[in-house]
Length: 511
Image (cartoon, rainbow, N blue to C red):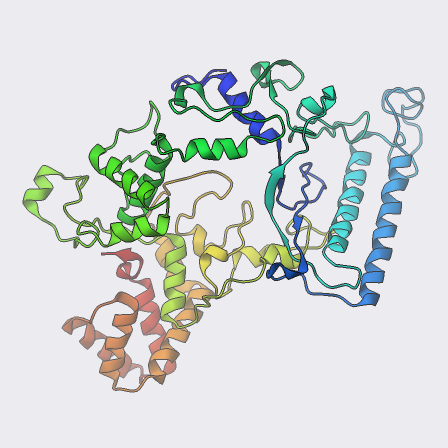
């Protein structure tokens, strides 16, 4: 249907859809149960200068892998040879199907039905997994570098079946229908009435929403998907929407609240900007900086507004209680990644070099926590993440967030979310006082302090400087000294003291 609030029509939707349906997305997933959107990755030359995720293997290991693939393919081909067509003897609904026998694969009614379909999907997934592994090596077993990316589909040859989004039935007579994922070649998308893939209408030329077309989009060639033209239109200097959205998100992450507080909605149902001239000024700076996000952020953080303290002012509060005009810096909690990174930094354990690959890539393909024909990926790999590199590189799997991020309002990774929820709940304090990872970092922090020269008083001052970026007050200094003396200034006492600093509200808040 046409959009109910903003002037976005069905034609606008399918005009954009044609661009992306004409694009091949290579993100590297394999076919298998509950995954009908298999995608390859892009092979890079050996001299690309990028590391390979997989380690190289020997000639004998490569030969064994090829044999394993041959066995998996034989199993898949054997199952496919048992397929029953609707109405055939032994098939569901066919003559003699009621209560008679089992097919070669051990399923009732020959090669049909949901059980048989699952067997085929598992066999296909195993074969695809091994094929993917083989593609990761050259003829000598040397690991090849790969990357994810996008590229245009082949130019259209006018075949009717290629001009409609693909819809593949994996096994005849089963419910194994793959959802549409694109064209076989570059094409304009039909307008599907009410979104029904079986009811295609007229073709909609690839383009952008008409209501946003104050800047004309370049003509899209029949030989290209239109992504280049779309990118040029988005970043046109006469098109203010994209830079407004971008600078508003920068402001949100730096100040805790966007100039447009509905960060993901600049439409009719969104909130108007609290300071339109400021928003427009930032747009001109971003475009003037040639769309450099780093340069624009640098200008903002060097401004007087960003460097204001969070000190309360009664008169300013009376005039602007929500601080929309930024008369002070709002006190706000660090996001999940920064809290974890702060602990690693203070303990001296932060590894700044990004890891090669991820836990998913290193573990192999297959459903997480599963057994059987797939390589098992343990859920603890994700939930109890203990790696010391920056938290932005932690593996994120659907419904399996690391505890260090989940407890501090990490956003749902499968959807776009420009503004996270921010809570302050007991579970966060309990995590900081009881989690094994936090306790380990507190112990490393204590080791760092006890290795440094100086008196106990000087080490306490160093602890406050590292954890809270300030000197301790007289009361804090005396309380820390009393506690450490009572405990005999033992390693455990220092560790408990450091854990208390991690558990303080000041550690996870920007003041």
